[in-house]
Length: 462
Image (cartoon, rainbow, N blue to C red; front, top):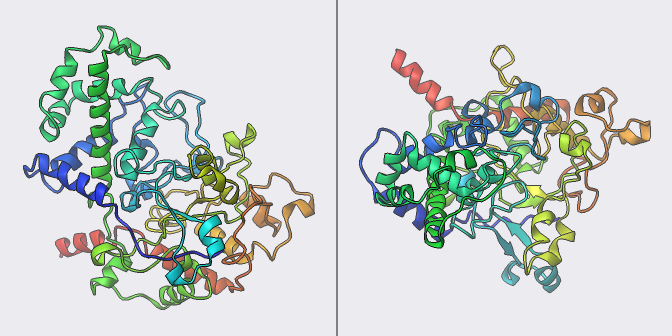
């Protein structure tokens, strides 16, 4: 399977939207602009859920690299409980960091000038961009995949579980930061809606279902305000607080860090023998931006099912990108060739906060990796990439529903969760030594933000 590396694409629609929203209210507000500050308040607000117990930040925690930080959950099923007790998602939370740089979802049919043949151009497009593991937050609605993504969890019954987007808008407008929303966006929008809310809206927003009764005009206002809530969240996610670019790699680019021998070895393997950079591209981003270590495409790596995932226990088999494509006019015919493919994530912050990176830190986090959280360490991920097609299958040893721990203990790998479309070209039998595996892990650890911050703090203490 050939990955087409064509550089990074930032949608001009998304860019203009983000720039214009920041220009609506330009008063200085510390390190964050007003729209970013508004987005942050929304992001951390647990009241924006059915039981007022879950925020965006509940599953996307800064100290964990903007993923889930519950070691107990990560060490097992890796999916998180929603606002309603015993309601779980079906995938591990993806990182919210660097999600704003994903291009609007599109199909790349190739380029004859690059030597692609007509068969590939007609039948085998490469899907690029979007957010969520399956790409369904396309950016087609708001011109920004991160903003499209931000609209999903509020109304998802297994996440924040609010029954109507009107409940989100009501809580934002009537909440502690309603005035900030007015300043950033429109001073009359919340005021007008305040006259339209039903008398019992608080009670209605505590119910798991139902629709808030509004006139067509007020429903349109709610839709507009809900879009602005999502754009505010995306603005925060695009801020320097989330997309920090403060890793050792960034410090090296600034001339403030020299890689050690192990990191240099890992970098060379990453670019060469390990074939990691085929998908986790290390070239510069737009405008000479630092590398993002993803090509924004989708792949089936043959990851085993996570037998402790509540959704898997209930029979869920993850269709990946195909589950989205099969419902899109013009793309449904490509669903079969994309079954089991998940988004290639950025490797930035992949080790941040982990016990693997900080074994002596009592506050360290057991992290989970891949879309279903099957793996619990970068070392095991690298070992899987290296040996997937070399070791015996666990099933051949009569070991079924193996967890990562069981697979490693028995020197086997379980069968892929989805057997179709598995990438056999870029992983599976890399021939790496254990020293080379460890070097790859060290190189990926160098992608975690916080190094430059720590260095600045040290300078202030001197």
